[in-house]
Every structure is written in structure tokens, then in C-alpha cells.
Length: 66
Image 1 (cartoon, one colour):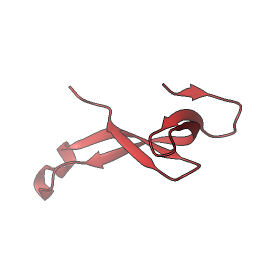
Image 2: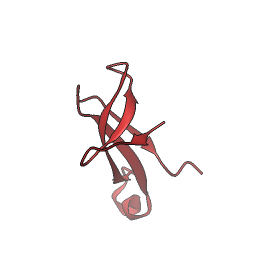
Image 3: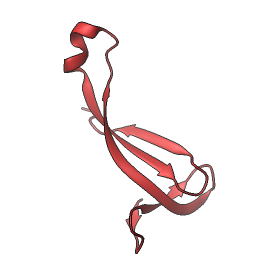
Image 4: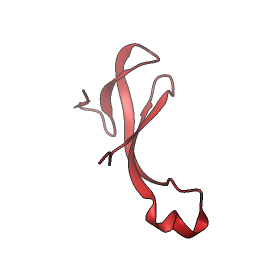
């Protein structure tokens, strides 16, 4: 579970690599999932990307799992 803290830009989350609760930079990225050029405009999905500020381990999760 992510929590906000008193830091300027980040969230405290559990890092699988560090096995600790560390400061993470969290963002949302729009990714194209289709490899076919003619369908690419219809295959964009939002992903939550979290990067540990201590070790650099990065995870991403598709936010639109309908």
C-alpha cells in the first residue's frame, strides 16, 4: 500500500528488491500495446510506473484491466 509522506515528490512504498518501505517516484504513462501500425491509435493504455529512489527497481502495472 502506498502512503504519502513529507517528501517533496514521491511516495513511500514497499520495494521488492530492497525488501523495505522506501521513497518511490510514481507516474502514469500511456503505452501503445499493439504492434500493428494501423491499430496503434486504438491500443493505448494507462500504466502506473513506480521507481525506487534507493535501488532504482522499477515496476509497472496496467491500470485498465477491464
